[in-house]
Image (tube, rainbow, N blue to C red; front, top):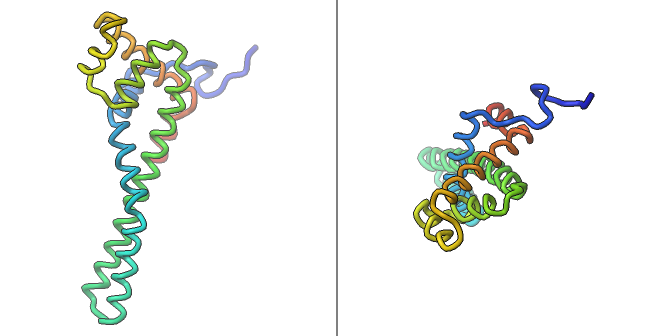
Length: 163
């Protein structure tokens, strides 16, 4: 008998809630990437604001600066937490996308979600080779494939536990 884990399934299938969660996260993929890049670019600037604020507080012994420094520190920590969350989500989505077996599904998910084109733009892009109904089906099946892989990787349990 084969060994299995979790709910006793070797290849668990995502339920409708998990598929919808996957579609939601795929829809936010490019925004998460943009916000992560912004955080990476401006993290050093944010740290400098906190340092400058602390230096000004020490010189002036001004409580207002102390509040600004504390607020800047809280802001950086909140943004870092969001950044780590987004990094986890985007890495898991990319891993699951990379494992899609059907090339048309993989291309449809790449164009629609990874590259971030609209539904209409995606239909227009593939129109020369596939019908609109086939493209819609490939996007749907591709998202389901991503959800199934995320389920297999334990993503949904981590998503609930950590975030």
